[in-house]
Image 1 (spheres, rainbow, N blue to C red):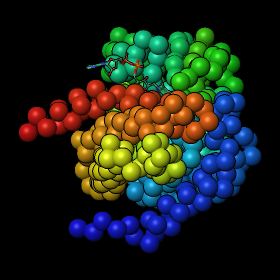
Image 2 (image 1 turned 180 degrees about the horizontal axis):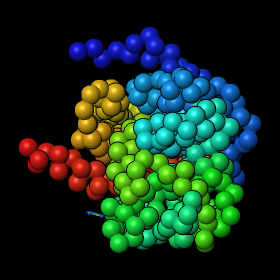
Image 3 (image 1 turned 30 degrees about the vertical axis):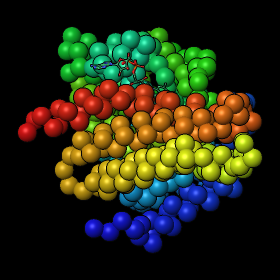
Length: 380
Ligand SMILES: Cc1cc2nc3c(=O)[nH]c(=O)nc-3n(C[C@H](O)[C@H](O)[C@H](O)COP(=O)(O)OP(=O)(O)OC[C@H]3O[C@@H](n4cnc5c(N)ncnc54)[C@H](O)[C@@H]3O)c2cc1C
């Protein structure tokens, strides 16, 4: 067993690391405070290929493997987790939905535009009344001639405002419940579709999150992804991809929080000595570093397995569960090591603390990951 990254993977990690260092680290605080993402940073990310990481090369993408992708998301998240989630949703949920389930026409139409970043993608499964129980969603897309007519409200749509397309999960056969859900590409500007105000979030403040509502919004039937009424399967089968992105995001946040706490512990003096000389602080650092390494192994294993034959939902959920809970533990200890200074915006651990929290919630809560893992264990 080899635990070293290959030269190619190191190159990919450094690609993410360099962009984060040059374009994100210095402005991440400002992006958080002002709750915005500068257009020029997004444009540069497009030019460099961040929007096409997982798109096949034949459609203009980078076609990288999942481990390379996880390494890049980890590096971006070290600097700015809000930026990283936009890249993650776009690549792992939106592009993969079209690559895996789209028609040839949809692939030709959308993949090159998504890969170049000409359009940004959003993914809309959740609703005000359905989160973990995603199969109970209520938004309808009823067939009428050549169109589906959408009515209902979706919630928590990441990148809704910038999105050129949103993949919306809606009931095409309301009588059938989860077996009546379809995945449909809804272009921005569709008449009858409206965006809510940005959510006032605890963290990931530079990432745009909104409700999307539909009143008699017509979308061509040609925008159906996969088979009609098979959308729930589409949603579930994409989650493994997405969860690796969130696990890598959580890992990156934790690594930055650890670095800050480590450095601070060597600078901050109390009782005439750096606090790093107190065993209570040393043991915190030891536990944080050990937890980070354990999560890293699980995340990288999940990424490698994702490209191997067969379903690996158990290992992917283990990675998401462990990395996100680890991240929240590490950011909490990082604040503790900073004392009162960890509680104010002067130090970045305050932002890491807020940003880490959602990783245990979206793309399946920790409770949902435990359900996936235990079901897989018990099925024999
Ligand atoms: C910042 C942000 C961005 C998001 N982006 C997107 C996006 O782009 N697209 C999208 O579709 N969604 C998005 N979401 C929604 C996210 O996926 C949901 O919030 C998540 O799935 C949880 O759903 P919920 O909030 O309705 O919580 P609920 O499902 O109501 O859960 C509440 C609590 O009950 C627990 N629970 C629920 N069912 C069970 C059970 N059977 N057993 C044990 N415990 C259970 C949960 O684990 C949780 O602790 C985003 C959310 C946030 C906060």
